[in-house]
Length: 91
Image 1: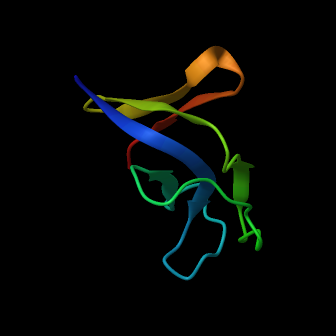
Image 2: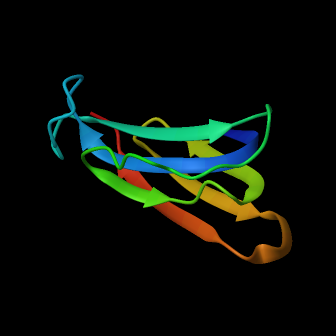
């Protein structure tokens, strides 16, 4: 098992999808976007297909736990004002 921490600004989490952005819950890739520095926060002006969670104004850490058969994630915000978590299977 591996645990990774990505500090930064939570941007979005997308449902599993193909490289073309088509929803594919069986074989698609889940995408997380976490900013790790830069100018600051800002609005998400365009909601992309399969976008599940968006919060462009909260800082914290994305904790990824990876195993041989799956993964889990949890966004831990500074001050506890926002959270997102879940898990999935590898294929």
